[in-house]
Length: 189
Image (cartoon, rainbow, N blue to C red; front, side):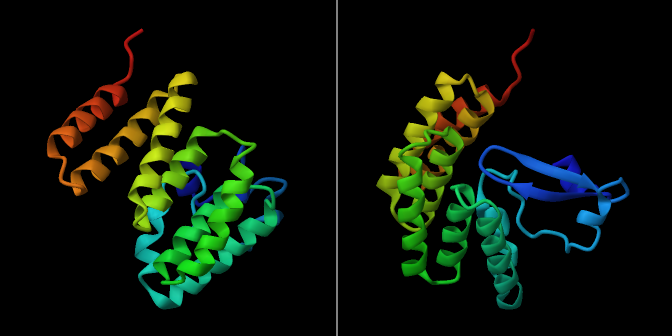
């Protein structure tokens, strides 16, 4: 995120496993010097960071074009498919989003990445498929626990808390919220 906010660095490439930044003032700066600033930040877990831009029809088209470029740039990646599905749902194009979700699910069958499972859960939940979203959140949580990824566990549990809160399960939401806060606290060495 520090590099995203530094005007001298540009994201040159992103896929499910890597982000590559190039310094504009460095020897390879010509690669990215004239690229426009990205609206999409692939190092964010949840695509709802796009909501302010997607709410503006003129900017929405540019974001969808940027997502298309990301898909072409990293054709085997799952994350850009899920981000674009989210954007298409926000643009009221659920049939197109569903096609991308099916493609992402097919690819995920051979890639049990907990962040991607969590992202799929988020996209499904946001499109009103709460039960399917919860299942993906729980799969992500199991995988994150196996990897001892406390930050991801906290992020997923926080989303589950919100899901249960919206469903009217205030006590369960409060327990999950407390668990997410405990996980977010760094472990003393």
